Length: 481
Image (cartoon, rainbow, N blue to C red; front, side, top):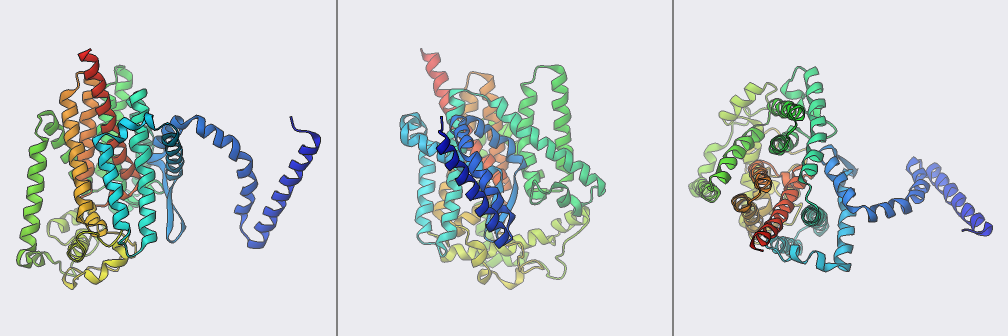
């Protein structure tokens, strides 16, 4: 118990802090100073709750993942709230657990995925030492670490000890369903016009590409919920939710997401028929041959758009027609940046220009024939191809490491699907592989791994593969004994 003297001192200190904060708020005309006393009061109980309820905080992150919104503190410093702060706290807690109880994570770190991720992060540090802007590269690495540690290793640690995949699926899909319904209602008020889709998803998503990508990647998860729902009434509600998702996907007007849905369907049959190796090999060979043919004798110049004809179309049918005729401004601008990207790779093929360096560096490498009306890039967006982005910013070794990782993960989901005896885990392996295929497809025309939504989903899927590998070992050991 506190004595009266101690109580008086505490009251005096609290009153002094509050008075100073009021003074600061008046002097600097910043009301946020008034939050300081309340933060100090709640800091201790909040910290105690977090340290005792790490798993609950993990579930909380999954719940807010579809709902997080971008917030810029300064022009150069932004964060996705409330998702990223939760990841930072989870990273700190997981790091402390690893320091004090390393044996709990040894099997995870020593796995193939663990070693692959160590190589991935190590190359980031090597690339950072050659970066033109070390501060930007450092911020990039820090963000990668607080995504990888909790979403890969904490996911595995939680679900190996207490598998609860149904809870994971529901916590992702229910808030996303809320976003879908409100977006459809708001979009409907604008007559489902193509140009109005961005207004309907704020503040949860930056644009229709991010929205449709998250939507299409969670559709297989919704199908999994339907598959494992026995109650007829609940099954009906899940079917309605899935149909709503498909309607929303159509009105998202995203060609990349529609293509990803097709890729997901192909992935479904590829994994079930044990043909993913052949499909991935054929895709890589096709892409490689296409690149060689375009580069040889500068054949890519034949695809240069007509500057005055390449405009933004407010009507979606005109938008699709422009896409077929190679006069769509979004794809034309992609070609503009891809050409610059290949020229940048040719200059620094091993170390790259450094993470987060594409935007400030690419303009001198562009060529006039591919210039469009938006080539001044007021949004400061990047190359719109994650694989090219990796090679430009971190060198070809980074592309090989990441490309090898995603191929390994997809092939592992196929292996897991055909190795598990329990149908429950077979279906989870199948859906994880489908989502990974979709993410791989989406990042061929975007750089969504660097966003909190698809980036978070990708690292979560990586954690799922690691979890399923450990559970398969447990099942095989149980059968053998």
